[in-house]
Length: 135
Length: 35
Picture 1: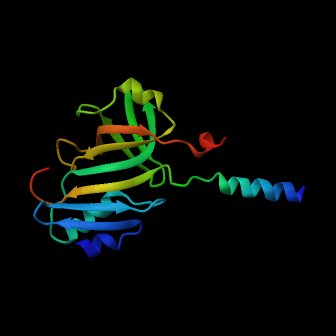
Picture 2 (picture 1 turned 45 degrees about the vertical axis):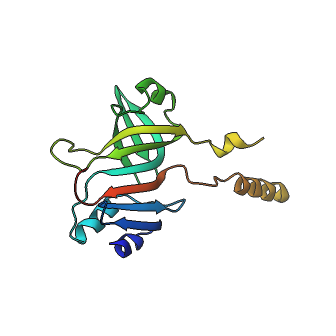
Picture 3 (picture 1 turned 120 degrees about the horizontal axis):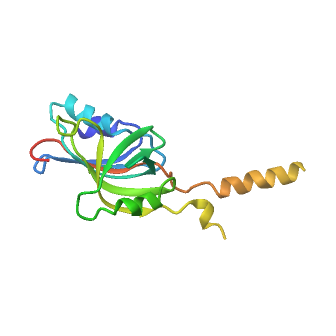
């Protein structure tokens, strides 16, 4: 499995622990990886992918009352859940709409309970826009 | 004029993001057992 995941474009390193039942994957800067590429690789090796704890950069999009998170490079879009410990308030995230932010969270395995793609937020931080770093 | 355009192009490269702003950075995927 380590080899199969390591072949995916953009993967920097992979560590698979069969004791813990976890694949830890670090990604290169500028990658265009989608989560489905990992779950497919895991399935092809005969395992059942479940939840993924992720660190991901993107932008918040406000659609009515709902908050979406877009990973622009890949076109991936996730509905945000703010019920976990460490999650910001909806108002805090709305203030960040359109700006690049980094989110820590959990993407549950798609099932009847979570038919659409969901990102349960456990933490976040603003990503400084390079334009704002200029003196 | 050409020189100014070149300088602006060089500045744009210098100002380019050091890291991408939209991407997965790290994934810990549970491959079996409990979520």
